[in-house]
Length: 149
Image 1: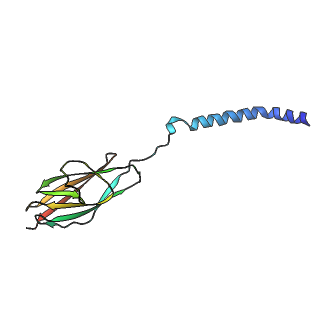
Image 2: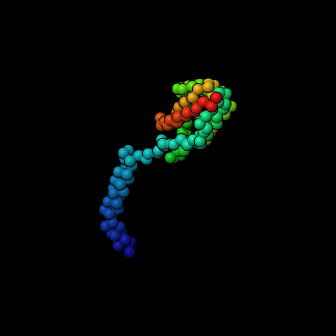
Image 3: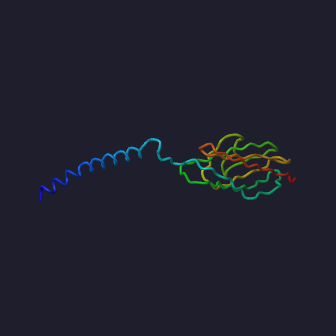
């Protein structure tokens, strides 16, 4: 009985070797560098702003509610804000922080926040707010206020 079993095993040896070669080649092909797993961390985003008044008086403060809505979620994404005022005069700040300086870049701590614009002139005012992420994506929002004095 053992002799028959050994003879049968010897006939299967080439099949085992062929299976081992096929398994190794499939493994090597499936692990090639060209098929590396890509992890997406750069997601586009949109800016949503609640309605703001059309008119602002000298010395008056307007609240601007902003939400960053991103298409995907990568936990290490950072968002930044900068602004530029091109008509009138005023200050823009985040909550109780000191007023922002035009064209300086400020990191935003959250994706939902409030900005406060305080008019310091009696003429119409316009400014742009630019929000960017750590991957170079950027969105612009323009605000225009008429003088109510």
